[in-house]
Image (cartoon, rainbow, N blue to C red; front, side):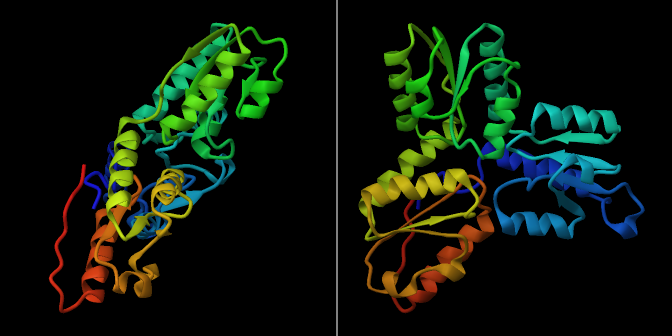
Length: 291
């Protein structure tokens, strides 16, 4: 088991804020103002479902928020959406991860200083969209290696990264930018917890017969863990819950490696360990933590 598997600081903070906001309000019977989350609070369907039972309704756009309270997801929202919520007069509970806030600030700073801004990450991910929204209008935005190579009229560029990117991927962009532009400024905005989790996970994958990566299929950092673990151990499987565990494959294994994304709750991890114990019933099962 990777020692840092499961909730990171930013997710723990977002869940705490959501639970605090939901306490005593949000349900129709309570008579309190409704509670909304603009997009899923975190990329874990099971956790989002539990929050829904407590009165937190997920909406996809500001237009769906008539009144009440809005929890800003851990991935952040765009500057336009934030301004629209302020104009509506709703109460904003900002659960944006502080590391995402820092990436937004760096992106805006670079654009104000006249740098073309390179954003390393999945252009369709809500975190990346929120970072891009803080770049001043008219500033060139580059989100792929191809765009960097084809860029014209750009002398200097600044780089920020989605907080869950791998360091290796960031360095690919840095190398491409250095070969293309005369001045490059880099802010390493990858979260420390992401780097630590990736290091631990690859260490575990190298020791295990079968590697299990646990977390939401819509979680970018979980998918990234699965990718880097599979490079080391081809028998790597990304599953969302213990119900999807490939029992036939682990039955004959001597060592199962387990890691989990930053938005995977502890109860799901515990459920997986229980499932493995059940599969290996009658055998002595020990759990070791690697870091």
